[in-house]
Length: 70
Image (tube, rainbow, N blue to C red; front, side, top):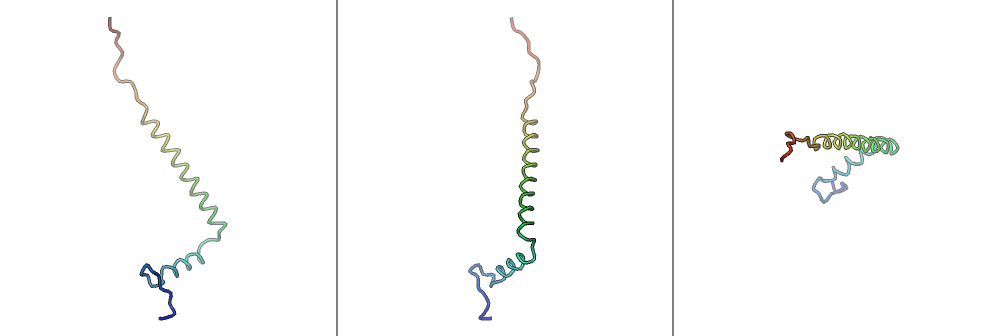
């Protein structure tokens, strides 16, 4: 046990080992780059939808009718 890595976070080296394993099993950097770009574009699309909906809700329709006063 003395050869195991110790982390300051208290995970007894399991955290860095899992991170390393996930990096080895995950997609290559080129694929990660595409996924990252797709995620950004998806979020931009959501933002456009939200902006449109906010604009629609924010439009104030005139209430009542205008009556000329003499």
